[in-house]
Figure 1 (cartoon, rainbow, N blue to C red):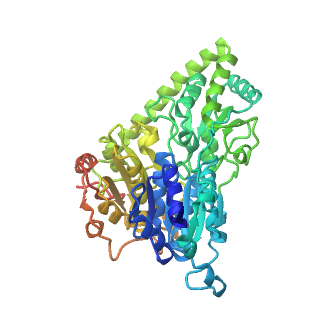
Figure 2 (figure 1 turned 90 degrees about the horizontal axis):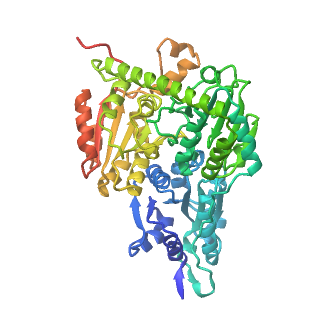
Figure 3 (figure 1 turned 60 degrees about the vertical axis):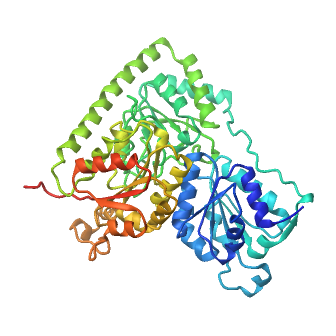
Length: 565
């Protein structure tokens, strides 16, 4: 039986359960566009630029736990997509990224749009290839999906020459078995589990540092069991690298995330003697501070990860457990039950009660601080976040790309995030990710309300995503926090001690003159919008929008104004 190479590609992707193909087409992708006209198994989701296309695939992959498939244009389109590919690489998002390549018969001439795309993407992908034989398509697709999904997960890239896409293929001699993923729940060695349990059971003051991969491994419940058994507080990574929530924010042992800078991290961790690190890249710092080492020297580390590269990468560990986080944490909990003496169990219960009281007091204090700022105009970031926290549905999915507004994970810090699996935040920091990510999450979870909190600077990188939201009528609520500046850069310039910044003088960090009218911009792309200045009105608008069946943008001026008279 004969078919084309591009049709064979679609058949294989459909065979492994792919439901959406995100993309922005060009000439070298036209065979794919043409084949999609009659395709009924996979829906093509059009983006107007590559940044939202890849970000949508990213959000879909993170929420669904399946590969996000995205097609971009040849070199120039791939160039537009590179920031989002970098994000996916830093996140470990399983993407299958494809692009058309120029006709092989013209390659010697170095034609228009041609370039070595494989070399360009190789540093930020797990595997990259340009297909040269149509008969290799089944093997390429199988390897791409399996590589993207194998721990540690991440993006892969396939370049397909336009003439190869149209080439006829006799499938009778080909193995058309779709990708079939093995079970990645590999157990850690028993002896390593016993040693880890012994170190933790003897701890006087244990703590747990947790990263996104615990959530992505479906191991939240197992982590909760270990934390409860140890009576240990659980701290997420700092906002600069905290992407998914891996511990319930409502749990008494849920602590605030780590601070940003080395001295504050050392101070925060000083009281602990043993730290369990689970599914976290230890450490990912942002701006250099002295002392350069953020971990106190006295701390003994036990680390769990399914990526061997992460174990002891930056700091020596007492015990390293290589294995999938779910069975690793479950077996560690069982080993702790056997290793802890009655005295250790009593000490753990006392620790848990003490941490519960401390965390409850911190949550109440933070909410009280937010309440004290209700009369400030423009609204402060704390006031904005508290106005949103009051109306969050239990099943809401939240996408954050507004670092100076979301206040270091405000929803988690006050216990407003009921389902930790529904939290998505920036990790790579190539801007423009949040709007597209929110649409991808909505496509993966159509039954759940989706709230995206996006800064004005971030929004302008990914604003074409609004057209896609309108075109496919994806009911996502977007709160656009507008402070008319690149505030995070101003803050960082002052952290660096730059003289003009410390005198509050900046160049190129204000988005004014003219001011951007996000309401009109949103409406021009087909998404209804409004501007809100009052806390109660913000709560009401968001509550109604989350229950509606169409996308909506709510612009919120944010600042540090003085009290109104």
